[in-house]
Each structure stands twice: as C-alpha cells, then as structure tokens.
View 1: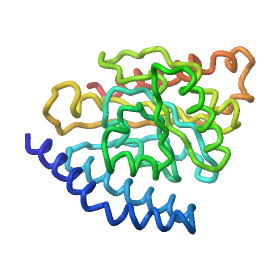
View 2: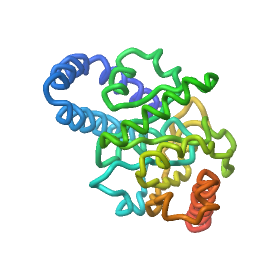
View 3: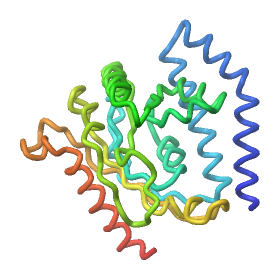
Length: 246
C-alpha cells in the first residue's frame, strides 16, 4: 500500500508543480526546439526514475550498447504493464515519442508532457486516423525523433504469452529507413497488474536486441517483419525466463 501511495502522491505533485516548467518549455520551444526536446526529455526521464525508485523496481538492463546514439530508431517491445512505458522511457538516449492510445488525452498536464515528448495518440477504432498517426511517426523519425510502439496493440493480460504483432506498426521503419530496436521486457506485470491495486517490489529485466535494418533482411523476412521481430523478442523472453528462474 505504501508504494502505491508514494507513487500516486509523487505523480500528482510532479504534474501540479510542473505547470511553470510547461510554460517555460513552451517559451523555449518558440525559439529553440532542439533545446526544448532535450530539456523535456531530461525532466521526464528524471521523474520516471523516481517512480521506479518509489515502486521498488530493481531494473536489470541488458544490451544497451545495441541502441544507436547517433540516429533515431523504432523501438518495438512486448507489453504487459503500464510500467513498460516508465521502464523504457527512463533509458532512452535521445528524444523519443511513444504511440499511445487516444484515451491518454483525457488527462490534463500528462497529455501536455506527452506532446512535449512527441507522443502520438492513436484511435484503435479508426483506421484512417491510425494511418495518419503512422505517417506522422515516419516524418518524426526523418526529423531525428525516435519512436516507440508496442505492436500487440494493448497490454497482454496473460503472463508468459504474446499477442500477434501488428505489421502496420513496422511501416515506420520500412518507410523511414531507421533501424528497429527489439525490446524484451520481462516480469513487468509483477509490479502492478498481477496484483492490482498493490505495487510490489520486484525485479524486471529489460533487454535490447541488435538493430534490425529491414532492407538488409531476406525478402521473406521483409514481408513479415512483424512476425520476424516478434520471434526474436519471444526467443529472448523465454531465454531470460529460463536463466532468471522466476
């Protein structure tokens, strides 16, 4: 219970007290957008690391050397928990926008920070709007902004299983030419979702795979890049499961 209270109090306090920062970021963005990108990234990264600390999350990060620092990428990961966003965003080395469900727009201040971070909001029931989001993400990557998407489309509520990765998510890499960085997230559901409403002290493993350049793959794998990437993440996931023993 105490961890849940601490996280809730911190998030509410941060959002309220960050109103002057949002105003300052808006002003900075009028004159120097790269500086705004860097400062927003630093502020939110700090806040997410505090959330992980208060939650008692012990994060074991592997393969971080596989993430290019000098070019934007498309992060692709499995999705079990709300904490997947907190865990992965706390590690990004450059401005990165997440593709989130449109329901996140309901939350004032939070949506402002998400927009500062180039997040895009997807209506999963509107195919045309979804296409526009993908096209915007492609332009963001071309402008130097990394993008992260969880191509299962929603949180997987069944432990140690995977839902099909939607192939459309990978058009961002196919059209922009950026590398795909597979992210395997292990045991994040044990923080919160597996025993709602409590936040539990737990160990989470995040492993980054080697960059995937679509054009360097055989034609068959290019055509089914979603399934190809999912297989890599699944293999890594069950390798971690066997090694970790939990």
